[in-house]
Amino acid sequence: MSQEALSLLRALNWLPSTHPTLTAPLLDWLIEEDSMTRRFEQHCRQVTVRPMREGFINADELTDERALLPDDARFWLREIVLCGDDEPWLIGRTLVPESTLNGPEQMLQQLGTRPLGRYLFSSSTLSRDFIEPGSVGALWGRRSRLRLSGKPLLLTELFLPASPLYRDLA
Ligand code: VNL
Image 1 (cartoon, rainbow, N blue to C red):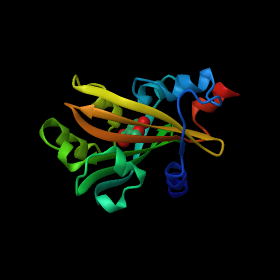
Image 2 (cartoon, protein in one colour):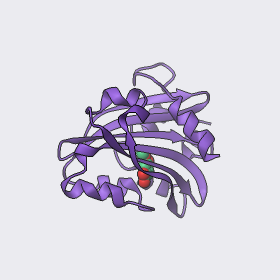
Image 3 (cartoon, rainbow, N blue to C red):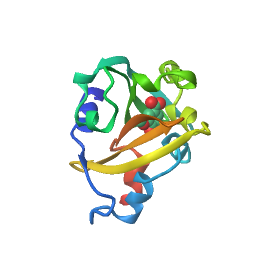
Image 4 (cartoon, rainbow, N blue to C red):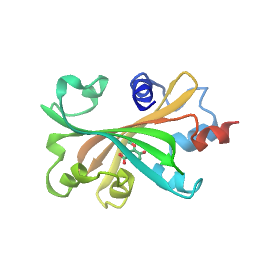
């Protein structure tokens, strides 16, 4: 299941926020400024992270992501399933250039089952360069480039069919 979902995440087609298929309830989810973990918590008892993959990859394993990040030789990759009450709601892929991993940002390699958002959104140095909605078939996703102390990282998220986002669209 998770491998299939990861292939879908890679197949997301990016859209401008002004695209006509992006209705108000959809944009309300996709442009969310705050942590998706916190947003999901309003819809279940417990949000949990299932790590799928954590480790360094080489630049040649990046997709079109490469154009959005510095020209580092290695990137820290984290791929997780975010669950609401044990049901998979979201696939998250985070790419952190090696040059971002100094100072407090080294913590990004130690997250394990701790949700990334809790770390990011508690940081006073967080800023966002852009957020871009995307779709693949009937599923929605987004990607955003954030900065911690000015150093970039790229987040890609795919909302799985059981996610509360789709209830709001029905
Ligand atoms: C994580 C959690 C990543 C929630 C996410 O998107 C997310 C994580 C990249 O813990 O890695 O929405």
